[in-house]
Structures are given as structure tokens and as C-alpha cells.
Length: 224
Image (cartoon, rainbow, N blue to C red; front, side, top):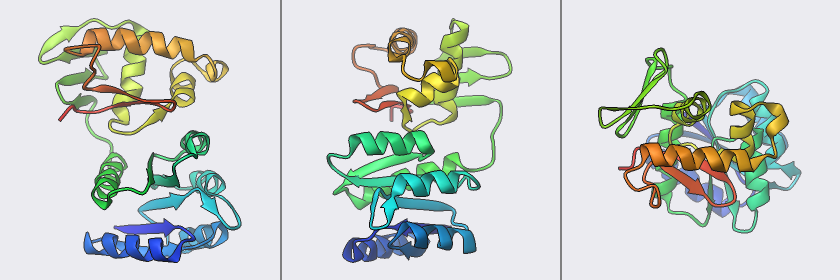
């Protein structure tokens, strides 16, 4: 697996590349947006770890350009205080983000999860912890017990389950579930997330599966 690391801090890039190589990945580094796009074009990576602040532009631009032709997972890394930029990068097609400084173990775990999600499509039944979503039958059960969902609840759960573990922004979920005209209507989303939690969670007040990323969006996890 080849990982492209895009960061203009030489010491950070070297340390990250060394850790990735130690974990068995082939690594290429780039310090600018231009170099990143050139490197990705010459030798398409299996995944990209991308800093948002680059000397010749924004990592958001790199993300947008890559998404025009590549499905490789993109994990954004960014310093604290760049929440708006990180959310915008997710809306441009990034798969996840990690805030600097971070534990290398966390980044490696998120990279493995992103690569798994990018693998070949699976069966029409999605299983996330005790939650089972049958796409063909439009049926859901939790711990083997059937759960009745409305069509919109089922669509929302399906979008989350198809990207299990991945952070999906409010805008992304609204576009996928309700359509492009609802990109700013976050009140719709909050209502339906609450309804899903009441039906799926053992304790909706302390969710284990449908998690909130404050100010950003939601992710569905297996609760392990």
C-alpha cells in the first residue's frame, strides 16, 4: 500500500513517513500542493495524508483536485483552531481528519479503517456492531430484534452505515438524504439523528454507535 504524505514541515513529514514505513506502508512525501498533485498523478497512491496549510495553497484545493479522478482515502491533518477548514475539506471529499498533535497509533488506526472502507464493495447487508442493515429488504435489526424505521430514517442510517467509522459532515448528510437544496437545514438532521438514537441505542442519552463530532457532523461506529 502506497501512502502520499503532504506536509511542509520537514521534521513532521520525516517522522510520519518513518512511522508509516515501520507499519509496512510505502511512502512518498510532498511539501507543496503542486508537488502533491504531480506525485499523485505520476504514481497514484492508495491513501493520502494531507495537511491543510501548504505554502502554495490550501489542502482543500488538493482534496478537490484529487477527488476529480481518485477515490483514494484522504485523511486531513490540521492544527487546532482550523475547524471550519477541516469541515470544508470533508465537504470537498476528505474521508477523515486528525488534529495535530496526535498519537501515531490513532492515525494508523484511522488509515487502516479508511483503506478498509475503500476496498471492494461487500454484500447488501451492512453490520456495524449489533446493528444490521439489509439494503435489499430495507430492513434493520439491533441484536437480532427488528426495528421499524421511516424511509428517511432508513436512508440516513444507510448513508452512515455505508461509511461506518467515517466522519460525515452535516452538509454532506443533508445533501445525501434530503437533496442539494437542504445543505444548510441542520435542524432536519438533528431531529432524525435523535429519532435514530431512540430506536438504535441502549441509552440514547449516552450514544455508543451514532456519535456526534461537535460542530462537524456524525459517525456510526461499532461501539467496541
